[in-house]
Image (cartoon, rainbow over all chains, first blue to last red; front, side, top):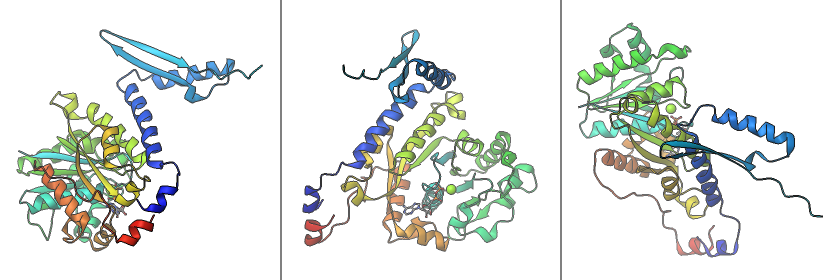
Length: 85
Length: 270
Ligand SMILES: Nc1ncnc2c1ncn2[C@@H]1O[C@H](COP(=O)(O)OP(=O)(O)O)[C@@H](O)[C@H]1O
Ligand SMILES: [Mg+2]
């Protein structure tokens, strides 16, 4: 890295890529080996939630947790913040 | 003992055919009997990279359909005596490859005591890619330090772990290796490109080789001489190292740092 680049403080795009990949790979690995209906279930749940609140697809997380002897389907929805007042 | 190695990636244009050709040459150079097979039905390319396109008379699908014998279809390399190429067919019929047909060809190569069979996979996750990996003992997953290539590679790793003969029959699974190519150390140093360490960490795989981005690759494909045979090239040296690691030798990775530049360029360069 040259001297001049020390003064340039643009975000490091490789580290952004790495962070995005970490998340998407973990998510896709989590769905693997799980039931085939998981993606469809996620899509339909999103539609239902959308009827009541306007959330971003990213705000809906579906995880399949495997524990000894049983599996837990975990759904988490981050609701949008209410406008102040 | 024959070892079947698939060169695969998910994403297209990342360097599978370049890698298949160079690894096959590298193994043959070390005296191994090698057959390299183009599974990219409809988009035959390996013959061009190997420089044997004008000698293709019969192809993979011809053998499967019984139009000719395997011996008639195998093209003997003119440079390396123990190296053989089986070209893909140019047919548009995607169903030309069948699991049974592929198995018969591989079995015949095994009976003929080949040391290595290299399967050059097409892009995607459809039938051709599936059949290229199905009978593999090992996989070389070719990846570029780029976000979509890494993600696609991870999907391929998922398929290797679930949709192969070895995974289905509990034979310990397919041994997987990562080969990073089109690596640009300067851009990695500038924080513009994922590093070997980043990709290794995300995919959790051992790295069998890092091949730098190099103009020699295009020159080699223009000439029909696999780049590993361009002796003065960094890309060739990187592929030779990868072949050595495939054979079990332990070598440190090379070409991870940008070539040294002068003082002025270092102080004021980007
Ligand atoms: N290390 C490299 N440096 C520069 N160009 C490369 C390198 N590896 C591959 N290429 C180029 O990338 C393109 C795709 O390569 P190819 O091996 O045909 O990929 P695939 O078989 O995965 O589609 C070709 O034009 C090839 O010359
Ligand atoms: Mg190819």
